[in-house]
Length: 366
Image: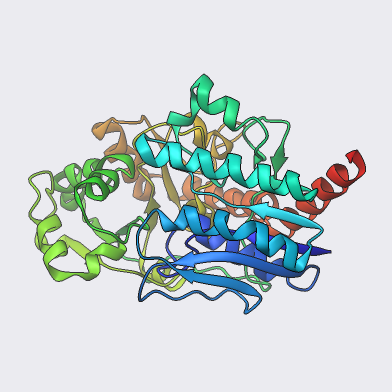
């Protein structure tokens, strides 16, 4: 079938889950679908999408929404696809959220006008989208398989074909924190510190470093030495200089070779979020540290697949990390079960199958 994928800002750096998800889906479906697409990229950034994708360089952030929607009608006329998939941003706070809602509404309306089946797939969805107003606009979008919604798509990750187990032989006692944020400003700094949870991990540095732990922080904006220096000098950072390593963009899975555990200290609830970094770490059999947030319940509700701590509790986080050395047999068993779970539940091949099923259902309903 001929499929048009509309996905803004699928470009470097490849550290954001939505970008990885779209790229993995395109790669997996390339032998099954006749693929075409619309995407945008920032100046001086690159995309690795096929040449059948129309790529537009933006001159302002709003163009990431305006250009794909503005180009959609002509693209539908030119290629006449059987099916259209839209992968919007997941943030819904402030003006950005209103613009995002508009783009979702406009996309659906244009596709209906052309009589072409279409779906909007939300890789993530912030809690602001939980209001009645937002739910009205988002009632027909598709969520991941663990939200309990009727419109569920199994959101996956493209894993290597061969069995690849990194292990932790060379890890020492290194803890890894990652976030995909490339821009550095007050809003993005607050996001990394308080939403992604780096602040509480900084505050744990004094206690954890005395236990022999080190922290590796990997965020794209740390490629700038001045930004790295600013972060290192934050009052909340209690890690000794020789126990803290700040990196920009890192390579997956090679970074795992040097890590005893991946810490995902997310600081707030979300309506939906597929934490690709968590899934990848589990696949490579790296122990994962998680807060007991509801949106992360697939990783602990039926059985523990990560080491869990009480969200927002510094003492609980420190005790949780210390389990890595105190109960290694239990940690190894949890890690083994986690790998089996994500390899089944988050396989990108299942995403392709689910999207094809939805196309069949929508086509038969016309």
